[in-house]
Length: 184
Image (cartoon, rainbow, N blue to C red; front, side, top):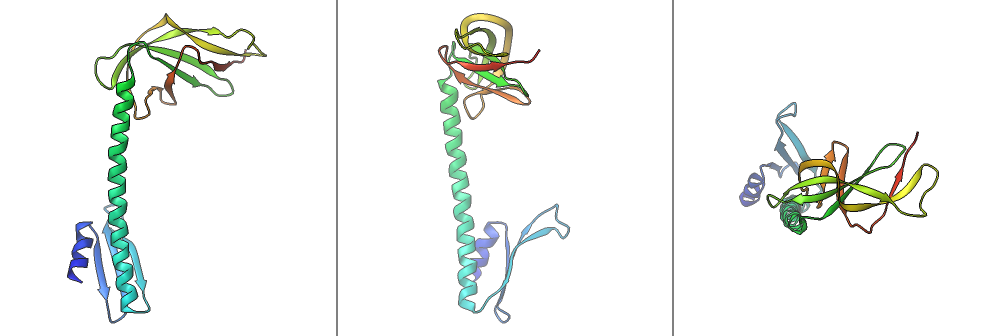
């Protein structure tokens, strides 16, 4: 039983077992909690065997979950690095945003000073013939037709970058069309 308590302590948990009353309790420190800890479980069991089985399964599941989170975090880092490495000078990004209307901004990468940092400039967009409607149309990028100054951006974990607090740009191509609408 001491090795089981040690396993809990390694995970920053406190385990208290009362075999006479068949009660097991587990607490974890929490500085924001009124008492300084949060209770993970506090159960009464039918038998000592069921109590010990539950306590062992709880800590094993917690250790497995922690390992899975760590592995997923590493995978996300690797994927983010691969997405950042795929971005090169000349790539296009589109940002579609708006409330009750859809504005489209298209950016082109003009420089890549480091692995995750890029310099972009906004470029012009053209209307796709035959797509015009009532205050709407489809647009596509016009590469190298710069209309804005240089902006330094950081590539996020999804291969795009934030353009504002409420919007992000994602990769696109010169052939891809994007819906654009407006109100007068």
